[in-house]
Length: 382
Ligand SMILES: *Cc1c(COP(=O)(O)O)cnc(C)c1O
Image (cartoon, rainbow, N blue to C red; front, top):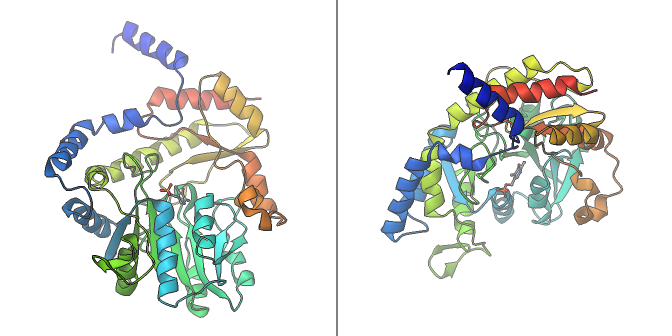
């Protein structure tokens, strides 16, 4: 770059809004391959329950390191279907309890209550934002059947203690892996750690489709086959119904897109980690709490979440200076109108997190100058 063009691009960055997430820019990197597979699907005349879904399921199973992957319509359905299948298997029944983090996206909890199971909310660890595993045991009753963990913001929520608890009380562990695809704990990928896991391929997730899509993974053959039947009206043989199922299937076109994008997931996650490290190195403001960067691949930074006592003022300041941020999430599930029966609960750590968190832009579309601009603005915030 000569001097003029570099000054030009510098000015451009300072004038142009930095979007939280620019999906157009991200998918443009793969546009040629995506267009090719899209036209193959169009020409094939086969749009559901076909070869491309099968191929993606095998590819994802290999990547995660599990025996079975069952694709479905979205991440919420993946979690709903896992619990529904356990009910069909008599592993749990209506009114049983499922432990779940209070600090999560509402979908984790919706999957439980939708199956007439009772979500039991447990506080997070203020440093990791993930379920505080040391607080699980005090919530276990004779109705507890499962623990749903959420690898929130892309950070692994797992340890030996969790495995031992599940074994001791004979509980299933279900992973909500919507935000952490590609993350690892002791060289094992999230989605292979528990008894079953739900994935989301919502366009903004680390592995995003060009529409809605989801999947469940497991090593349990019986569970897998029931989930598969449930995704297709509860029917294995056409017009013969073993269960009251759903219609929750992944489109062939989304499976084709996801097979392309899965090839680039590790590179995408690596870029996210690099950006997270740059933010942590460059941002020095004692009023801002940065996320921890754990070892190895224990965080895939779906979100880069900072905390600030004056979160709302900080967000306004960043917007005025051309940086779009989001809040994940502004209202905790137990304070939502949808859950008025548990609005009385007091979960101070969760509530504090919801008041103070702010998510900075983090994705492969960001360049070095944009990261510096965001960091500098944060350093100047008083
Ligand atoms: C995105 C998400 C879901 C739901 O996935 P959808 O595909 O949008 O239905 C579930 N849990 C968490 C933690 C999520 O972030």
